[in-house]
Image 1 (cartoon, helix red, strand yellow):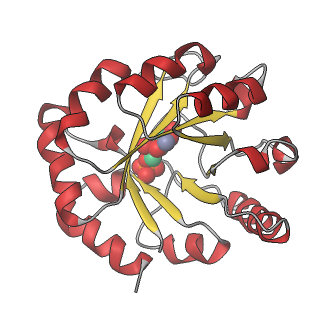
Image 2: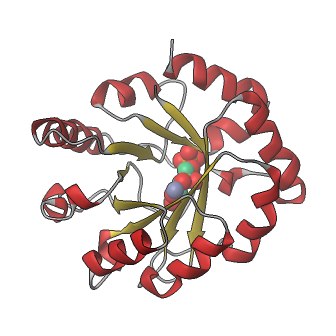
Length: 217
Ligand code: DX5
Ligand code: ZN
């Protein structure tokens, strides 16, 4: 089954709880939560207190994408706030293996993210230790950007590597996914689709259901 992970970065924060309940009712399996520190990426979003306060709104999987420098410092905070999966950027960790281990110690799922220009070779040794790889299809930091076409080639290559190794690693694609390109993204090998502006601009429930019907026809 392919899964949808709507990114709440594009939500109306004055109605965040209500909008998350809407995603849940519409059937989205994940909630994608973008944490930004103004250093790793040139934007700020929110941190663990916000995650803790929305944890009561849904039992769906909290897919926490950390776009922060040295995320290892905060794994405990995000795990305790209610993350089900924590994804860190390979580019932001001085000791990626250590950070992945620290996520595992909290008995939650671990993901690693690659920004567009980072080669797949960054994953060679860590791949068997992670549950998910997040391929950024835009430069991290902002919602509403167009998907960078070459990143889909990376998804195709990653899918080949995962299959060749006999792994069950989830492949998540994040950035610029729309109704126009989602089939191509799935065809490249992604099985978890993040969508921010394409879900939250307009009718959230209708958009979620429309994505889900394309994801699992
Ligand atoms: C970008 C974030 C994305 C973003 C996606 O740095 O990681 O999750 O919210 O938004 P859209 O789908 O609008 O590109
Ligand atoms: Zn994200």
